[in-house]
Image: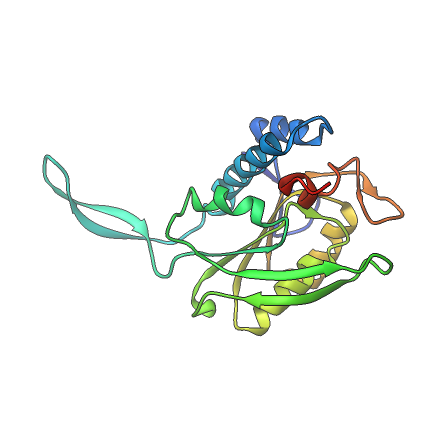
Length: 217
């Protein structure tokens, strides 16, 4: 298996694929430049998305091969809604759309108060009808869990039901909060790190993912 349950918690999965582990080590390195960092974030998102989307429903359709007609499976129903949490989540979008190019893309804008570390909303735009879609929320870092929890709450308030969350690095505190607030949401994690520091940064982490993706250190 390429994922393992996180302790006794249902719906929380930690990736075990060797390529994900290898690539996370590369983006941890402070000497990894912006271009390489951005590409690796996309690659990790694709690898995690491959696992997270393994339960998409299928239906058979008729196709004609060069040899004969046959029934063959395609993804059933509405396509995906990919919802990155701005701005760092944008770095993961192309990794998921490389798997499902027809996915619709929404955006949720949240910023973290530098003193309280609590998230504040400034933008929310979701594909319609959101209630009929499988929704994949993206954010490279799950630190306190506040932004992810609020983003998912906003999606639910607008009718979203089937929601998955994908992150690359998580702190135990964030995993606990997100799972507690939304036990129905499947959480896929590349790596669970040791803890948060006094500034609510993940340790050892990889620094500010948004700054490193967009070169705004």
